[in-house]
Image 1 (cartoon, one colour):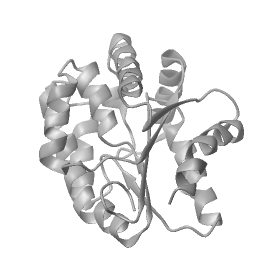
Image 2: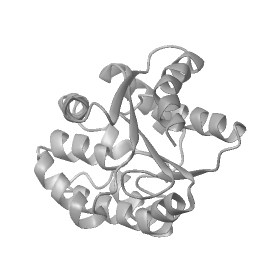
Image 3: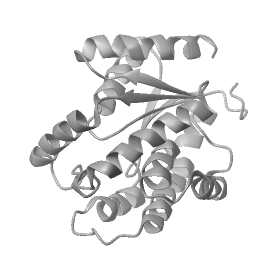
Length: 220
């Protein structure tokens, strides 16, 4: 049982734009399923019908005037719906939930990047989600400029729903603040959030991820 009383396991992937987190998340899910484990996927924002509507608003590059607090509240609106529809039911069934981003993203992007502060983000989390947090968070680290280069290339070939151009187009200083936000979380919660270097061939990076995940799986 997890510390919240659920028999399932909650994992999340984090990182700055272009860090390779989605690739590594996919590789981990495939490995877990090959081992016969039941895995439920979540994406923040956008895993539910309501979340997909919110995602379009958040990531539309036409919405450059969006206030940081608006971003924060929309993120938690999507997240609360995903928790109700997807995450909590799966954990109660004993499944493994793997989420592409969760509240750590809001701490890094809105709390640190937008300057709203961790206290405001955590207060919103408490209101929307109570004590629901991942058991383990893998945060992929990469040079910010390299990651943005990857992200811009990805956005040039992705469809509208998957395009994250509005956030990718923020200033370089913003993205450096986001990276510092993740480092701050790692200092505050070293037992939960693990920084994993994202440089190198995907298969090599995947083994670094597995070294962090395997001990947590062993405790189930």
